[in-house]
Image (cartoon, rainbow, N blue to C red; front, side, top):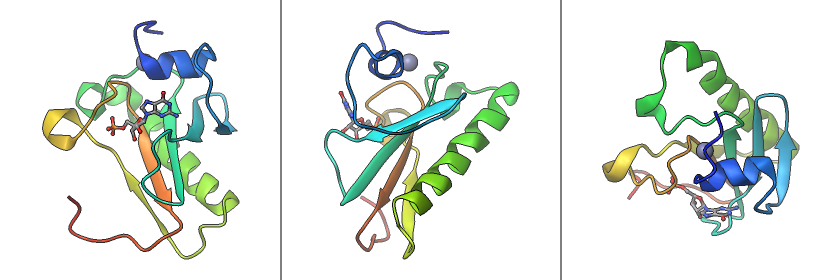
Length: 115
Ligand code: 5GP
Ligand code: ZN
């Protein structure tokens, strides 16, 4: 399903431009427009899934693939010292775009606990 009211569906479709970092059959990755680290990429499934809370069992492989793609992208971008992946879910999770995405953050030391 493609939801044409959805920002990330529009980026997947190419109707909104992005700086692409990776694409394959199942997902694309692009630079976050408001980076929170020297490297800040978003890995999004081509298919619209609103959030982790909306996924069902048949989406498990796809969600796993997003993390596989994130790790491959981290290697390609030279994040050998480490990186952080984040999936915000729902209002309390800080999710602002309702199309599932993995944040890949790197290029600086991360802190814990997160805000
Ligand atoms: P969330 O808050 O839902 O976890 O993350 C959404 C992310 O999308 C934010 O980090 C925000 O900066 C990014 N973002 C919002 N609009 C755009 C856009 O039009 N293009 C790109 N590349 N990133 C966006
Ligand atoms: Zn979407």
